[in-house]
Length: 170
Image 1 (cartoon, rainbow, N blue to C red):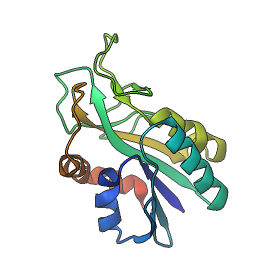
Image 2: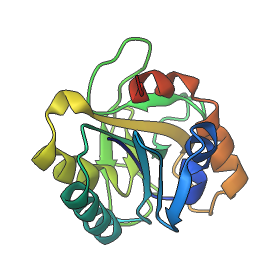
Image 3: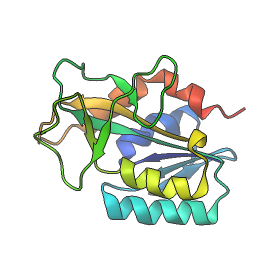
Image 4: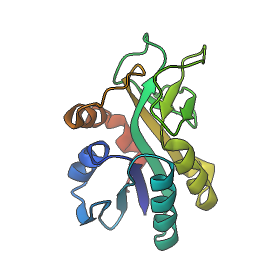
């Protein structure tokens, strides 16, 4: 099975709809080839839910998909990055995972910030080869502290059609 991990339902919504996934519970949607896991925000939620999924399902590929803040205002909102590897037609930037929302950065180079990817990678690496782990982040803001609207987040992610080629259910 292929796993898509998100922190928020609004990050997962377009995949749930596109692949017509069945709701198993508030955190899990699936069909016979794809599982979407919505862990909740942060370290503990990510570690607990991913450990459970990998322990109870035969996962062959895992994708973390979500929003990230960026410290460089020259990078457009809505820009897609793969943070853990170089992929054709997708930009790469470093990503720092913090336990709290990042509103300022000491980094001098363009950097993304989130609250789950490091933990997603840690758990996924225990079960999968690195070529089967993808971390996709879409720039949602330039390190602002205000809560972003759910429909805004869903819209940012649903525009990233290129991600579907890495899901590849065939």
